[in-house]
Amino acid sequence: MQQKSEVAIRSLLGGPPKVVPVPSIAETKGLVTDGAHMRMDPRILTRISDVVSVLEQDYTKVLLSHISDMERAYIDWKSGAEETRAKIYEIAHDIRGVAGTFSRSLSGQIATRICARFDQTPDAIPAIEDHIEALNHVANLSPEPEGAFAQLVLKRLDEPSDASQKPTDRPAADEMMEG
Amino acid sequence: MTETSLTPLRILIVEDSEQMRTLLQALLEAMSITDILIAEDGEKGLALYMETAPDIVITDGAMAPMDGYELTNRIRTAPDNPNPYVPIIMLSGHLEKAHVEKARASGVTEYLAKPVSWQTLYERLVTIVSNPSFFIRTPTYLGPDRRRETHELYQGPAQKHDAPPPKSTAEILPLDAIRRPSLIRTK
Image 1: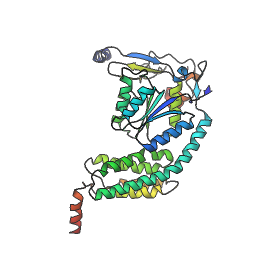
Image 2: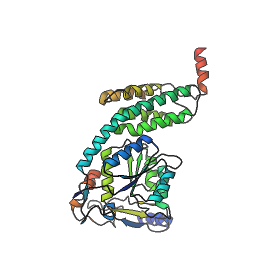
Image 3: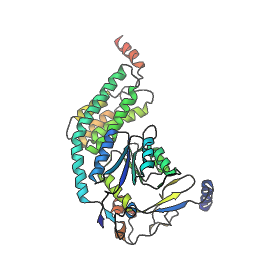
Image 4: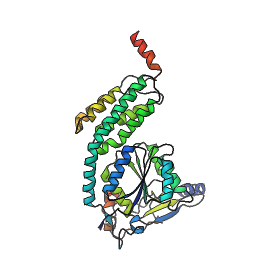
């Protein structure tokens, strides 16, 4: 049975797969001699740690600037600017990808939740006021909360909130509230 | 064993996030790598790759107009590419099964989750530079051989029959031990 399926797969692919041995870069670039194995350099590990520490300080400013941009984009959306959807998602996606590397894991996780809400509502901007507000608070703390408090923040954000709305729906909804 | 000097490497970063580009460049420089090329999307990355033939590519997954998956596929299959076997590390915030499978099918060497741990990135670079690899070429796929490695406890059909056995335990330590402790060879 197994032989049959192997035959079927091979005929589908047009023949047996070819295995190509590729020499190591260390070998081709002459980084080692006599087949010696390479290992991580503890001095480089220390240096990288120092560099990340310096970048962490710069990143806090960048993160706060990103959050301001996100707040502005969200306000624009409330005014009916539909193109801001992509802008908000882009900023959240950036924070999600980078924050954790700079010891800002909670910011990254909040941003991940913002992205998830966008993914769940492809045609609208989800209600994310609470997320932006939480992100702003957390980003202004150094170090960021961890452990039980961080979990509490995330749990609160995961609770169901108002349904998302399309920008064009918003004025009507506002009118209803006012009326 | 010898401590790894990565200085002679030429590395291409393909990333649309300015923040991520800055971070990656700083990390590579801390590893004493100075020959760093940067592109902002897959299309520019592919052009730069063909022009400069880097030793390693580090790419984001989601980018426009060409994403990291398409970039990987094009590097692996371009007929005029002098090195279709170049190691490609994909960094992605998308950890869903479909994205991982897409990356695997396109032929990436490593798929690392964002946010990137700098220790993991360094460890993977040393591993990639240090170890020879095996590629599988079929009419529809060119990429790393992902079958299980030869192991005395595994006799199934998916092992690397063609892979040479290690000469000693020391030959595969310490990096293989960090990556896949369950596959440490004891003979």
